[in-house]
Length: 254
Image (cartoon, rainbow, N blue to C red; front, side, top):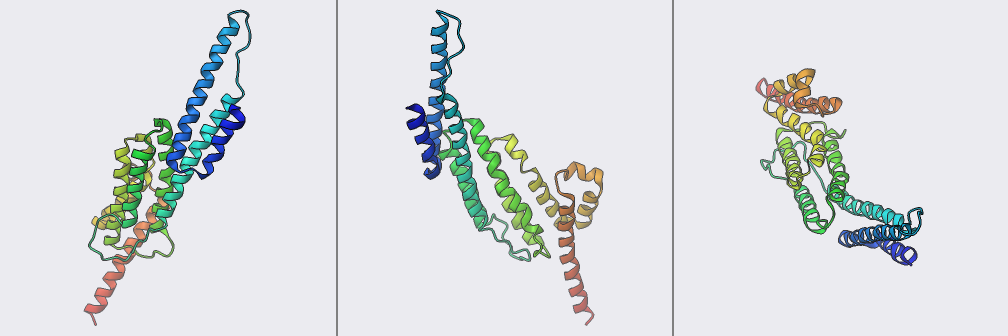
């Protein structure tokens, strides 16, 4: 009955359950698995009280364990799916002259979702499971963020666009920092250092190039930045600088 009705019934409901409901199912599965293991121990002890015998193993115990793993995967799938939808709303004007430097609307919604689901809906999970959800979620955000400025259609990047992009990255980093997971925080290293390189370029292009192209100095400040990607980002900002300079010179000498 435990296998055919309880375990299979709970597993079947995972496909249509909300994250909150899956947490409840996961906790139930954990309780049932632990109870089965305690029962196995008690039955084994009683049997060994009269004669030495192999340990008693219930067929359903590992089934509950596999169902727990499936529940964890279901939570990550739902969270990552929602994050994917939010990321699709991202839009950067790379030639922007907008003076605003606050996080983009999509990033504000994304970080609110992350904070809310981790501190309320998923608060009933054990620390290991919560960290796994975080670890699976971060690449769904960081990888698109890294790809946006490197898109082939992005030819030039203005200083103001960098500031807006940096505000989004900082907002994400702050949200992860509040979660207090050092391991998850480290997974944002590449994104944060790439953002730092872009900020360095708008502050002092010559200094940023010198620091990035010097292998020893780059290992200190930008060790996680993709080399080819970093070169491309610097080139895009240099290109807009040169273009504006040329336009000004043409205007002056007309």
